[in-house]
Amino acid sequence: MLQANAKYHLGQIVRHRKHPFRGVIFDVDPTFANTEEWYQAIPEDSRPKREQPFYHLLAENDQSYYVAYVSEQNLVPDWSGEPVDHPDIPELFGPFTDGQYPLHFALN
Image (cartoon, rainbow, N blue to C red; front, side, top):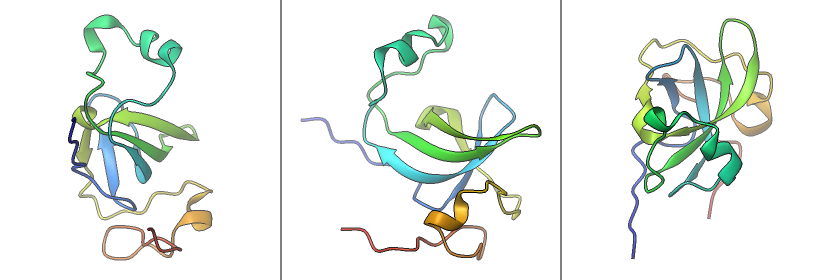
């Protein structure tokens, strides 16, 4: 049985290791759970392994806000202390506190 432990947590701000965006984690898949089409669209030499956590982010870059799906190997913590301005954050999280966002609801 595969055992996957997530390195990052809900409400944490992270940055992409290679691309210029950052975001707030709002969900985690223990292993790859997106479409095969999405996976195959990644250039083969950059394609992450499937057997690792994948994170759903409310992401931002200099031009826009969006939802990103990123493998753990491509994330690093964001230590800037700056909030993320994604417009959907208030639907899931409370006010930015101590470098992260608290959830609005309890998880099982």
